[in-house]
Length: 147
Image (cartoon, rainbow, N blue to C red):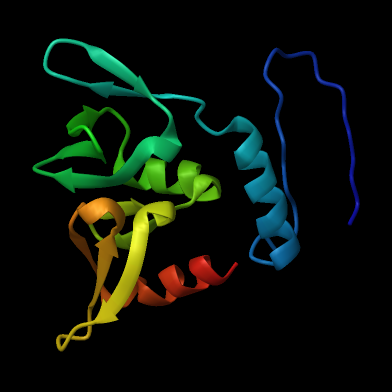
């Protein structure tokens, strides 16, 4: 691996990764960089106020009717970010996309069972319900758990 530093007269720091960005080394570097710049707190919209939440306290995110929601132990709150943005940014904090409209915090998944349809069901801790892991996302989920 080659590391180059270059001075630039600008206020924002820019990091460029060149090479095979799908290699294990590149993925680890990108994950580490994301961890440094990942969200500290997320702003969730309640009925009368915005609430600051640690990402680790969110059970899952879901997209429905053009909006994105964060589901916590205390309720369901709207969030401004798009589902794919949350999935990319919070991957280093234990979040993985499990179907087209859901990103789950792996720390809240208790068990996984196969369904007759070919999909899987993830049972959440503390009796917080179940979520569907679609066939399309199951291999990514399985690899994510193993890392």
